[in-house]
Image 1 (tube, one colour):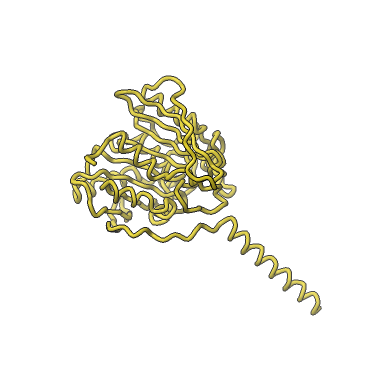
Image 2 (cartoon, rainbow, N blue to C red):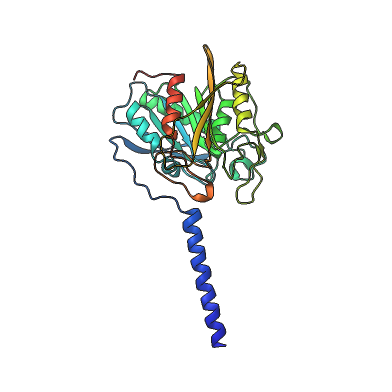
Length: 328
């Protein structure tokens, strides 16, 4: 009996060690410290549709007189603060350099009511008015900081990228341009919102080894949950927005120079641009996962590789600023 107990204890210890190693390898993200920036991180809240909604804002020290506003939305089961970390505080850095306001809003019960009509999280099931909430946040920035309502941009990771698509589809009067990271448009049978048919400048930034949002299109699954439905391929997603903008042809293809020789990922892009038409760009992270590309920070391995060949926030802001340039 004593020998059996020793064996059970031994096996239990082995299982715990294996679990700890698995957590360390697959689920651990790099530790990261916020950069020493002179701006302020502020909290905000408002009541919308009878619910208390919250956000974080980064206000740069040298803010523009009529600053742009960039909405940066987290992924499923996330928060605004977690999105700051996932982007390695890159949007804060860009805001400090260029004088715009960054808003990191919190979704309803850690999710956004995006355009995926079959999703089983509360924001979708309760049909939360996230478009209205984000409109109210932008208006708060207009009222308090004199923000430029003609330079409102939206970006996000995963569920947050899907929410950016929703703003582009349903509220093109609110956003000047959108950028989605690790997100592709739902197919029509999975779509739960109305397409306005109006063109919006769009950047799609997807990885070819994304284990959640399949680069070539297909079923989106998160730990076995497939309620989020089926998405278009990354190229078909970009082509949809290019078609709305009136672009023709296959677009201009570019191979990006390697920035980090120790990183196995690479970057290429397809771009559609013409005078008088909103630009559209597909930035493909070859070998990249369900992550925000950045200079040094690694997200958990279970989400696939994090590319260090580009700074995602820097590329996204450069795209936004090219669409509606500010005074700097």
